[in-house]
Picture (spheres, each protein chain N blue to C red):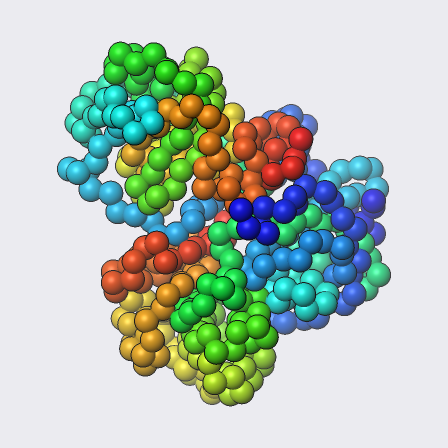
Length: 202
Length: 248
């Protein structure tokens, strides 16, 4: 269906290749969160791996900062349709986290859980093999609170709501349990290249 | 899960019924489309298609109350925008585009939620709050509601006449308006930046303790307002936020 009089502003061919369907490039860094930005005190901050109700391993901020660091540079895609190119993130790769904990993933799914009560589900296979990290720095500086600092999950190949802000832990679950937005009309998996925005998208 | 989980995946034809100028930067676009009924506070996705097949998508909040006829989208013109200039400069009655939704199951108010309800909007952030104010007037006028609305000037107040009329007519609806870039002019209440001090003053005058809070606007506005509300003692879990990004 053609919209009369709409011609649009096409991205350059290079940008077009990097934009998933329905996305546009932004130079801003918009913020989307469900409520107030929580203030997370580093002295009280902990990051915990859980299997169901059982804690497997927990780190203080100092302990976490001592883990091996990973840097990732690339594009991020928000379900609200903006894509930002060439962002640089630093943190602890999920592979390194599991290795440091001596944890072999006991299930195929997990929930990332946040200090503000938010959670989101991700298959374990989407976090391992160098695909994800717990990010603590953006563009070389400590991650700002409004962008999820002190630490957020970072899974750039999925829509960015999966990259839970203010993350406090990962909880292995037996089943693929829907998280906060997944219970409120958003897609269970969220692959931007297949445009899996909402419940019912292919 | 609620009605919000209804399948939003299909695109529907939207036919423009009318385009109404609200402010120098905002138009209301009234469309008819056979979407599932929305809830107050939700948004829809909009898709425009060029003759060569190129498409652009954006999300817009719905300003109209559920089940109130045409869907009203209030769209701010962004000078460097790709989609909003179309609605401002080209769109006219009878034109068509595509919509899908409604979308969003968190920033919504349902009659069962009750009140008191506190709405805090900056600029075009008032749009989804308007849907809540209008819905409440129809289905639950007894629910005490306060809208705190900040805009740069009186001229830039979206829904200005309707809001002041509602304030005069509806016993349960309170309104506090501040303009930040021009001196006080009736019926505006304040001409100061909306900060924690002013928010406290307004809440004290309202004399209600909100059960549900909805804050919408630009990121910096929402960050400041939600932080102020939490600092004033409101539990974070009752505060819902919707932040507008910077592109369109």
